[in-house]
Image (cartoon, rainbow, N blue to C red; front, side):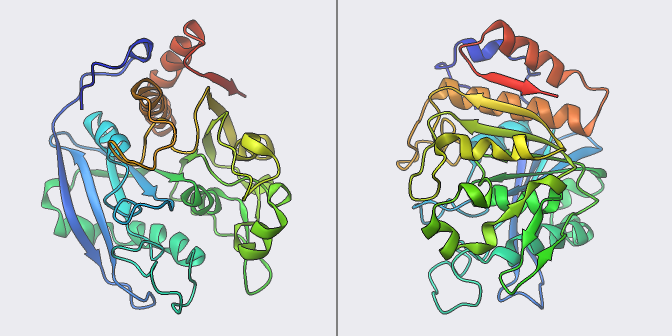
Length: 320
């Protein structure tokens, strides 16, 4: 989508957008899941050897968009610039999931099921291509990244190597070796940074980032403060960068809150910081990171860093 409300963010270089195709729904059988897994596949209309991004949605108050049908501003942009995006509807979704059933096992987060959903997608790529002929034979299974927003960031961090706390007791290593890069968007931070009420209600969100060794970009807004969730203010969502040996970049968006300029949907009422310029920075910087992380010879990330450093009002980036 082209917008005329983007100014300095245009200095972050991206190639011209290409036409895309979306197949929705694609359904995978899941005998050990309460419902079959439904997902949306969005990809460039043409081209082969497409890198794959798995996108894990968060929560929010919207009925439909916390599902495979959300995050169009990111999905459209990434697919329009050469990436195949696979979006599941987790069981936490009210539409297409069990998010309105307080008696469902795992309610309300369905934490372990969310993690298993992304593994199921990787196991089911043959079935996905069979149902989506538009991408059949075009997905590069050797280049896979995972992206998660909010609670989806917690989901993805476990697959990137963060040790997870099993609600039934013990610590779990759920790292998925087929995923070679990640992006955490306004994600949850450490257990120590949670409020006592948050930690008591959602003990499964406790994560040990010291084992997250997969290459990862952490994105957070410097105004993303949720006093109900954390005692550490906006810095909480930056903790995966500071506590993880694998996270090699931290993108901080000035003035941004939890939706990072509007990533969850176009003109979404619950977006607390809607800003086309900020959204454009999020789109372009995440795309550039994913391109270079999945193809080390691609200069997109280096060029994006140069652009931000030349235009520091857009964002700040720490790297290592």
